[in-house]
Length: 415
Ligand SMILES: Cc1cc2nc3c(=O)[nH]c(=O)nc-3n(C[C@H](O)[C@H](O)[C@H](O)COP(=O)(O)OP(=O)(O)OC[C@H]3O[C@@H](n4cnc5c(N)ncnc54)[C@H](O)[C@@H]3O)c2cc1C
Image 1 (cartoon, rainbow, N blue to C red):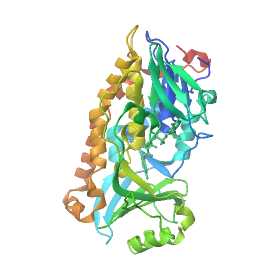
Image 2: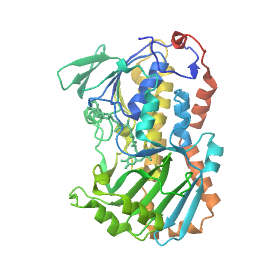
Image 3: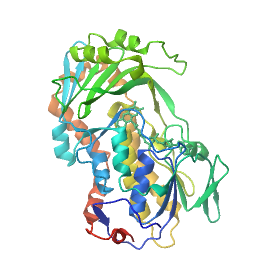
Image 4: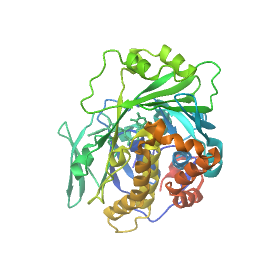
């Protein structure tokens, strides 16, 4: 192990545990998170990324309290990152209020903020203090093979690396997922046109908006400073043909929904839509894996962005996988820890994916009865659901085991 480790405000109590050679495929939020956690725990971790550099694309993501809790455990300083939210207002395209979620109440129940963070900032914070030499860019993994003395990752350039385990954190169209034979992602029939824009003057920076229509929906979520994440969801199919002037398509579908919508549509151009749309996919949650290979983040469970939980679920994977590996003792087989991780995650992540895939968010008519439910009940239901799927007991145990880091001597973090 190198002596340079992710800076952490916390120090995990030593345990009788052997150091494993861990090969992580993919340097997205999932890959860097698990690498950070396992380096913290004293393992020899290398991340392989196919791109020439570690770079976050797209706009912003919502980090809910469950994800923020894991970031704290990883020692990631999120202070001042993005925008903390207090309220989500949901209304119809005709301006009728449907529900107002009291995010502050959720934060109070779950004990950590809910914030909107541009992806580039989130990845930047995860990489603060992360040893750069642990990431090998321009390295596309094309094969994984198990042998008597561990597991080998093969690269497109003909090279390879040996380890004790491989973690496939290689996203939606994961090569590792393909290799382990897990079923492909299916399109849900929807896509998002999305990006970041400058927040209009006078807008409340802690309040997010979702507007639902009969044939689409949109959202404006403040993402820190003057930035706002906008999205427009419309139907999509695999034979989708990109329109010549996508902004005209958005204007045709969404103009008149509100004054704010019209202002944003007036400022957007086709250039702002160049990277969109992002089709929504959903993976069937895979059954138990085999041997010393497992999946994490979108490679394991891509889900539609409806609940804004994808990144948070990758962070929960990280927490549970680190715990399963740190509970490994003596001569125990590493694959036992991986199966325990998969089993612990499966039911909860399947529940999140199922709820995120409900079509209610795409139809004003389907959601109309929701307007009858008092706001505080809706807030309570969401907070209760998030608590139920967030491994609260494990998180509390881990938080208890974390103690303030010594102020000097980075090697004191090492096991
Ligand atoms: C429109 C949209 C909006 C979203 N909004 C939210 C939100 O608000 N909140 C939220 O929590 N989530 C949101 N998500 C989901 C979120 O983006 C993902 O869940 C999250 O980025 C998954 O991270 P990951 O690290 O697993 O995968 P990725 O970010 O996809 O990273 C995978 C990495 O692996 C690399 N890679 C791939 N194949 C190989 C290979 N063979 N060899 C080496 N490297 C490889 C890739 O280059 C990439 O760097 C949204 C998703 C979409 C599409």
